[in-house]
Image (cartoon, rainbow, N blue to C red):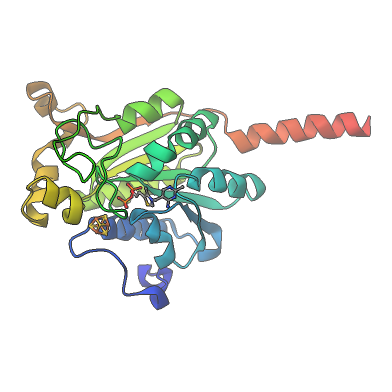
Length: 269
Ligand SMILES: Cc1ncc(C[n+]2csc(CCOP(=O)(O)OP(=O)(O)O)c2C)c(N)n1
Ligand code: SF4
């Protein structure tokens, strides 16, 4: 099915600011779904609240636009009741790691078969530019006018340490990787996490003296490198892109079937 048929045209024009990176993630996501040949009825997209979470309004799958930070909890319920569906959860960095941080680590720990996409623009876009757990020290935000003193999470390490069985990272500059990693994440049986560095020119850019969108994309180009590259050894400040974790571990819905079987036997006697 061509990508355009996955779009819910009646909800356009979209709410995103000119130059926002979130649209590139939407494009990559739909490209991945198209290449996998998934039918609309076989995909469920669940989000919380945020500019990133608004993505579910624009796609013609089964969609749930739920509460800020709670997307993974709703998605777990959907997957549990209909394990045959492909469940995809796009989240902002605030949504996934601040209010939703607890849901995030426990979803990783359970290894339930769904795909979490963390659209990391290092700021709360929708609510006016507050700093997030991924902003990092030295970043200016409406709630950090003298710059943030908080250390940031590393999503890859957080997901790996919490038990996710597929973890990848890229940026919206690397559009082919966006599509490719989302595709591999959907194909993976288990909890998959794809972190995508995205730009918010309106708040992050303006507050941090990044003049325009091109400059923000140049940052992604010049400050990232493939995982394990010589460039990283030469310059430890570079951010690595690639697939960091890809392992097989028994999946949660499958394990739960064993519990149902054991309980049914006991009831039948
Ligand atoms: C329970 C609750 N708390 C707070 C909010 C307000 N709120 C909405 S979106 C948001 C943060 C959005 O930032 P992020 O998740 O990083 O996504 P972005 O907008 O940057 O894409 C907040 C705090 C809310 N809607 N519900
Ligand atoms: S405020 Fe930022 S994240 Fe939200 S739509 Fe605008 S550029 Fe994108």
